Length: 294
Image (cartoon, one colour):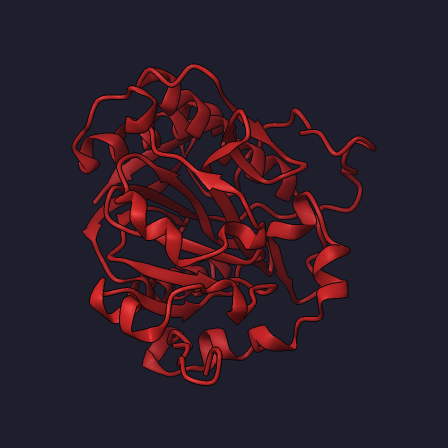
């Protein structure tokens, strides 16, 4: 219970039980501040299991800046092009969406599925990553309930993140092997391209402070979990989120960090399904993977 009164949901894994996520989650309040302060850059957003490593053999630059590498995903082939599924799930709660990602991951590991690019918009929820702290949730239970905000744990790296209507979330559940940094960069640079098309010209992807930034303000957050070479979770892009909801948390565990929306920077309001399909198209172009929509 956070702050002596808040319950965190452990989202179910495949089959509807808690084993899918609970088996590798650590309680948020067991993370020491020393460990939090000792992680930065790509390591901060990774949740890695089963000896997958963090991309050893592909070191980050010593200055923490991004590495220019494109991921080539392992999937089904159609001629010379690889093909995975893509689907826009509309507005779906976080817990069942995570359970679905874990189910797809098992299929990818078993080689019964090439993977899926999942695009979704979540109802209001605060998700605690593997380094998340309960004290970074600032609102009391009554305020969270008034705004319909759930609290869930997540296997991804990172701290606490807000998902809410007006935010496009992309979860590629795909085999990346050890090309983890390239996968993260793909997510960030595709978001930069999408935002540029919406008129946000100053957005940049940063690997040293993972996500997409406009100056000192953060417009997209990245957090993934890798097991047996297959990713879940992904990137959340703020298009038109109700701004007062950001007051419920210390974003990414960074006091004073300001979150920003695309519409705050002059972008037009766009239908979420349109934004999702455009993100998918840009991701397909960057990764060289064709998408079969379902």
